[in-house]
Length: 147
Image (cartoon, rainbow, N blue to C red):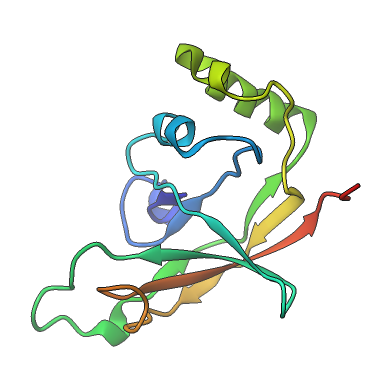
């Protein structure tokens, strides 16, 4: 997940600019090596009771004193998409193959989603999330058919 504003050319600002899914058998160790500056590794969670997917982006420190937490929305300027197509799969395979990171993984590329979307809008700050608050980011997707 890349934290920046799309309307600021994904170089600054407090928002979501992009996201990508790693294949299901990617280890955390491999995924951490495959992220770039400004990107963060966030776990996709499934709420089976309500049939929804989401990510929690937790802050690792408190906002400065005097900061109005009501103004702390995470902004998504445009709908963001991830599509499981041959180009995306090849891009992810190339990324994971860099520096031989892919060696510790099963060679089969398998993703949870065929498509995934984070909708445009403001994502409110939730003070009670984690130790210092955070954000719940809904992911709407078409899951891969499971055998």
